[in-house]
Length: 290
Length: 227
Ligand code: FES
Ligand SMILES: [Fe+2]
Picture 1 (cartoon, rainbow over the protein chains, first blue to last red):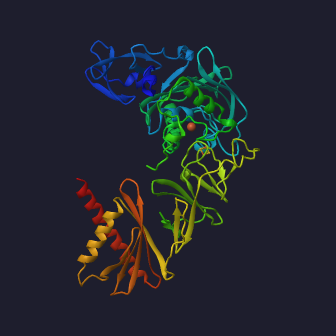
Picture 2 (tube, chains in turn orange, cyan):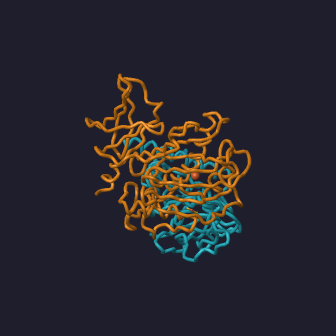
């Protein structure tokens, strides 16, 4: 199966639900290199067309999702999306010129916090990454990282002091990742932050961050601004990684123990043939200048 | 391919990092706090970040992404995520040969760093960027020197025109102007210019402006021919 055919089996986010215009205005975007148009019909139903072909849609996690497949794999579950006392915050999109897989890998990485999100999600000299565990959840076939801990000066909009933040990461499908982290205001629950990645093509993506938080004080605008700031900082990295695609050959990039999640993610992609946005062989390694 | 001039030495002070591109090879060129020059592949061996976004920390270059330190031998010496760990010697950035001569930084990406022969009497003037290929710039220079009439303060003639290195001579002012062409991808280039040491500041300024006028013509010519 080609990388593209494999990628066609999944659902992809293409818009926030509340930014789909009223009938008859058509919104256009791109998925896996294909142009699509999104229309809210007169009766309120949303349709997605790629040329003459109609794609399936579903409305979930505050976004519109679509798939080129006639029988896509079921979308992953986020049970916390049903907890009505959480605040659900779709954060808009960040366009990044990098492989969708690089965007997901960056989301799974904590070692960059002190250097990229300086004084927000990390700060020197608190750079050490303690050992943590990574597994493949056999039932769901997801990558799961647990017991991840990191010192954060300002873990969330609602955090006032530095705290040791605990993280759990899930990668339920190649272009989506979810993290659960210490809620700065409550001990008994965890905040949920996800990125849903829309693959524009193999080297461009739109990242749709989404949060499900316990935060009664911050305004929606503040929370979105906080998350946008974080992702813009990540973008300055993502657009400067070479090669643009994610290398799956372990000889091409050298990891350490702090990269266990990234190692597991790369292996998991390779095993399931999720190669859209990936580089398989060293020989593809054209690291030419732009 | 021989060595290519990528910058004037004075444009890369101690503790600074720059990006350079030589024959499609993306490079980080940097100078340690004590002044040691290095030119490496512009890619961190860890997760591929361009090292030209990094920072000099003393005698090391720190990658912007996860802060790994590389010393002057391009070997990784410090991984902040594991402060106690002594990184294996095998973690290395890819090095290229570089040298400073005549106030210029020279890099070779094919392993053959021949020492460039530079006239002792020259001093660096400036580097200038062009949004067009060096061939276009060379045509503009040829045309403008030919067209210069008697009123031109310099009346430059082309004394030598190699592939990368041109020498213009002004009989009126008894002045040599050396141009080192540095080809870049996507139809762009730079010129690194050297001039006779005894050239007065006022004249240096005039020549610098003359180079800017080449840029104006070259970039318009290019736009016209691209249409
Ligand atoms: S990519 Fe350079 S330190 Fe991680
Ligand atoms: Fe980040």
